[in-house]
Image (cartoon, rainbow, N blue to C red; front, top):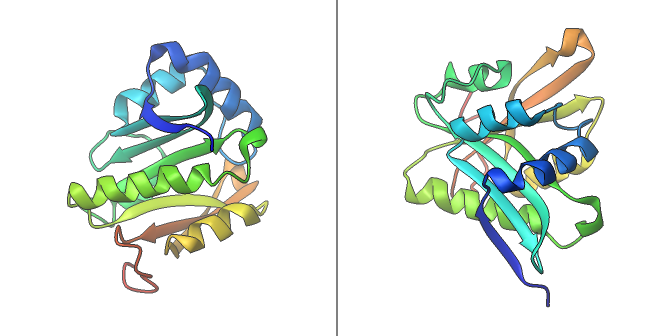
Length: 174
């Protein structure tokens, strides 16, 4: 059984996180060291996941009033006074199948419950499609509450929301 741990990321992890993000950039967005520092400064969850001591993934999530200039974050901020926004989750391809994303989300949902956060928000690509992300988010009770075009119309995202208790929210949070 591998030793899997979640911890806060720090400055020493930056190059590893950037390399992981580069591998998944078609599903996230480009990020350099300066951008990573900016996102980490806004994040309420700046987590790194290790497997047997090696970095295997990370998650960045922001609360309301984080000051994040991002069209997806702005969509949720206009609708919910209190929320937790998942900016990105990345798992190294060589660790696929270990349910590491599930572990990060379980910890995130627990954080939301303990902090009294009523809604968790995220988005994923639907044009071009990111079917694995859709299936993953469905398991956690996420439901589409909107969509929008990004990158000059080259990408469409599904804007998703879930309740921290995992109960399906279809049409309740529009």
